[in-house]
Image 1 (cartoon, rainbow, N blue to C red):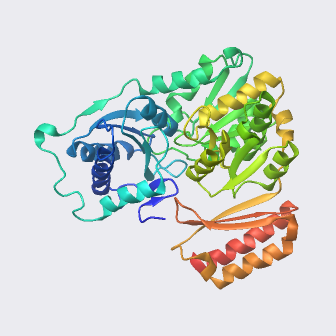
Image 2 (image 1 turned 180 degrees about the vertical axis):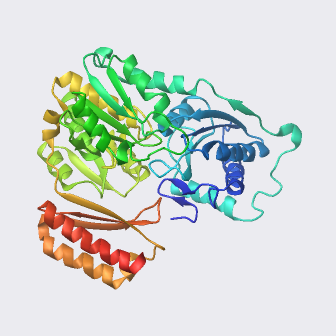
Image 3 (image 1 turned 30 degrees about the horizontal axis):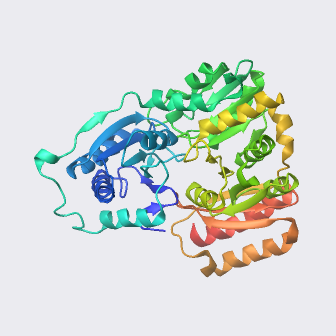
Length: 451
């Protein structure tokens, strides 16, 4: 992992290094220089953001950096991360820049990058840009003369273009008539698009957390906190609920009974449907090492191959391209339909799930029986630093003891977050009680050593 880039771009507290204006300006210069050296470059860059109060500030700094190097910027305003990917690939831009910290609290922010084809950058390319940001004087002499500086434009049609793309992806009868949906927009980037999208397609839509004020993004709502959504689905007798995160690249759903379904279950449902239609390329699904053991069991029963990637949608995508898969994702709700888009997209995933429901004439709870979820516990522990876990003997011993107790009836996965100062402790086991006990035991040791 680089000094700036983590599993999903640069992440940190807004207005503090590395998400301060000075570093964002350098990042804009480095991005423009990197892509300016590529063949067929157009000097055009797209910037989109979520609803955080710091977004416009950082967008201005990034745009200034790009323009100082001779590139021009189109500001898409508030738009989901996958919307930037789509517009970048279809608008003739050298790169797309997203200012978002995804599911993190409002005071965080981040910078994510898409190359001209709408895919995220490789580790190698990120390291090259990072080096230019960090190395003093690396870009000296590359600023252009005043007559050659770039211009900042407003792309006022951004949301409409992206919503039209999503509408075109829904094909079963072209309609959601007859479905009652509750949608949680997390007070984020989906707020200006999702309600209109699903209403246009014919659904009866009830919206929650759709009034962003710059500081309420992800605040006890969205994909990380679906409790209110679950209650409202039951109270409204809705068919299902959809929860997005702050930049709308994640989807978590709630069935008609108020039960929460995560990414693994959505993948299992869509995999069976896609295989039945003959569109599941190579009869293969890619997930991460964090996926529930139940997904592997379900896919095996369906005769579908299962490949596991490292944590992060970029690594899922890498394995998908390598294996020729069209479906992959993470249990967190990043779901990739590579035959339709170049990145994880919460609203696109929702449309695919709704297509299964409309085509099968089954409820979501009935479809969910395709996969039995193993009891799982995940505890996030705040840490001061991130030394190699293998070097901390008490942590190693606690993991080994848990694995010995579980045997073949479960597993343990302990890793640092790539976007937050946290260590994630995950345990799966035969019972909820045993799983929770073992997970808490390891988390307590981690907290003692690193908290």
